[in-house]
Length: 89
Image (cartoon, rainbow, N blue to C red):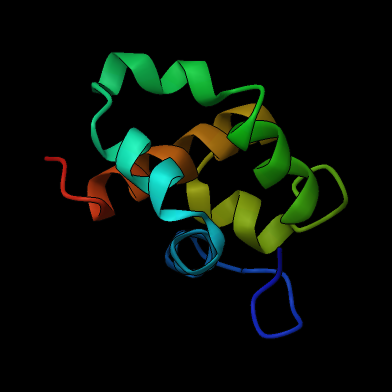
């Protein structure tokens, strides 16, 4: 996944890429989850976010934008932001 040929630099850009590229069924599944259940996305979607968005590979801008110092934690911030954009408060 990428954002116009570049890695996303902000949470909003990362969420935009996910909204654009995830299948509707996946987005519907995430939207129907409780906040507590989002941790279940750590190994699937979270791994993709960490790898594809360069959180392990030096995308310091995105890591810093999440306010986290560890890629695992940063990916969960992005997942939660996606969940919010899908209509959850």
